[in-house]
Length: 630
Image (tube, rainbow, N blue to C red):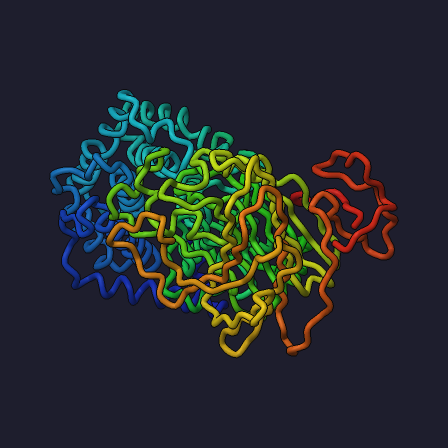
């Protein structure tokens, strides 16, 4: 990953760029602090894996090795070797949880390569033997025995096989046969995981694990580029050139992500890797995004110092990024009113796949930002240490935890009881999307979610309307017999429900958002609930309290066929707009720009039967869905 030219480039940027100079000062301060810190020990702080120790070792070796390469101060190199020698003396690298092994192979590969000129032959042998004995040999053995990570399509595949590749590159000259075998196995296994980035850069495990996988994938590509001058087609993976779009679009105007699944609400993943991808693919908007919040997030990883500034950043609006984006394979739609405002309106809306790795039972969930505030919030992950958290089958204990159940999302719950609720293998698809300067929308078919409850059809749509100033969330449900429906939206706002139950005022930090029930069965009303399980739901101990969060709720009489249409209106001036007309989801569309002749509506490129460019409605005339930039 690093060569003399790269080091010279860093030195030049330190001299002329304030942020680079700050990152360099942070690096040296971090390395100086490590000089007197004790070496890492073999321990399991979380009671489960070596990963906490592993990641500390990785951070230390990156910082110390980078500090040495930039300063030639041998104190840093000596301390880095002390760290590697201590870890080389561990009894093992916790192969039962192979991520620990993979991340240590990655760390030792960096330490061995970046410090190669400093280490004497005896020291090199210590590091090399650890890579072989604790890393590559167990990795090859697990490939041969068919360990699950060798065939998974998720982040484990990329991290574990990537660790093998980096370790093999580091010691390939001294251990050519072992390195070749490891490379052959790893490259044979990677494609099924790389395919998850296709076709358009979305990632099925959500934003945090997109960031984790990509953070380990980019060093593989960078290492292959500097070591052998060929990444063997990895950078040609479909969608990889667009994948930073996923991070950009999944981040709201004020910097908060659409954190469905086990994703953090505050973590900013993928930004260091975005710098390398920006330079490699020539995408200045990626470099811009990578720097958002960088100063506030210091200290940043040493690789940020190495890759930051390789290409000048350009904001999305100047780079020509559309306001809306559909990620097709993961059935997720993101929309905003502007790029250049932290108070812009924004929504993220997903259909998706309940069987996704790290998934929730959350078909139809959404987040909503306006006035610089998140009004509809995702709760994100639970404690990974909870019993059965990774048991995700039809009887899985994962579905006993509130944050993973449908009731813990911003979606519909049908006939709630102690079962998981939504089908654990249900998939939803976006069946229509549209975008114009004044409006956007997405409609999802979510019918598979509640077939066990007798639902034969469920579609949900979400739209930005009226100059992208207001939101609509609309559900249309048909069932074989009357069903009980609960509409939930989690929020940190205070909620005041009107006396007639047909509207509610949400207040947060002095800002207001109005919710209006535009259409619903007779008797349906808003109410407020705590973010806790329903009386019919399981409620195991040990769950994280959802402090400060409550739910805006709609309930009503059971019905076999109904529509719920909700207006969510930010009130920057306190003035209400007129209530929009309610139209069937099948008729949702957007008006073309005034200087663009109407085209016949199309859904995913196909003509819509019985609808023409002359038909009209409030949300009308549907152009093709926005596509990735060429």
